[in-house]
Image (tube, rainbow, N blue to C red):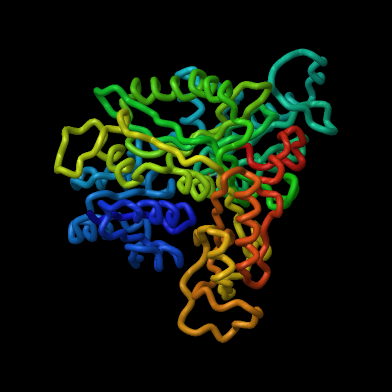
Length: 486
Ligand code: GLY
């Protein structure tokens, strides 16, 4: 069977790599893919972007596509899954209606409140004057007395807990600001609502209570739809490391590396997550009659031993996918098909078990997947730098290179000058350039292999964090250094 993977990042490379391991998959087309999918087994890149829905459907019609997997959120929010389904294709990706759980933070928060999903409290504002007034009142109020309870963290200087300012719409990771002071909160509100730095995405904002603690990412497979009992099957827990520099310092990024499993996501955390977040979410999907056949990402904060939901994403996480999929011991193609076909009646012979019966099996051990980034990232960065590789050294580590912002370089590389290394046939094309995912019998060995693998790669200005999987991201108690809060 032929598969279409939509997207161009490291997540999509990991998805294509895992799909290619299935004996049922004959060919994978990546639209548009990247320099990694270009050379992955069974893969071919298409000159079609995720936004070219009609052209993608026409391509699927002509190429016997039996499964389409949509990686990023934007095409889902634009209804690509509905369009493909209407054209008769099996798609792993929720419909436009359900994609609002990520595309609108206000919609998402209302859903959480309506169905009793445990989450930090927040208020919604459609005008800057009211939002600014709320900020002033918050920071002017007396400091909460010690032992007054609640899960809010404390700001280091103000005596008042920080506020989290969230733009309502999709903002490519730029729509959340943790504000420890009234000035910071006002700056964010003015930027989003008055200066419209995010366009329409910031016309509405949510102001959320800050919550300290440890972040955990749970990716899960979902099959829910009108008129049938739904199911959510969570994967092993993972942790992203969002700040640019070691120890939680520096600006936020799209993710500097991930580990799986998350070491401190205990059985009791999982039970709490199931009861307080997963089950009410499923009840909500069922009650709303949403067509949700795809993946969901629960962005959690573990605070005071309890799980709180900071955000839903309607897709797999990046770079969490690069750490989680290498641990999956089940056929990922069959998993995606079971999601995509949902509760529909059995079709052709390729129909496997429904999601509720799917044998979701995990390998023992751990994965560490640090990300190498371009110089300057997450600020302005250079593109087009050739990437060098010591293949023998990389092979010894057993690590898998997942390309993200990396494209195929043309022909022989005239800039090759790193001793002992050859051209990887790639050049940088984005801020997060690649991840190296190493599997080990335990977290320490996975980490050691991943960092040995990083030494086998080089490009001009290559940056990475040295502490992925070494220490846990510090608890989010210091808002000055904290990363994105959703
Ligand atoms: N790692 C967070 C995300 O995928 O948005």
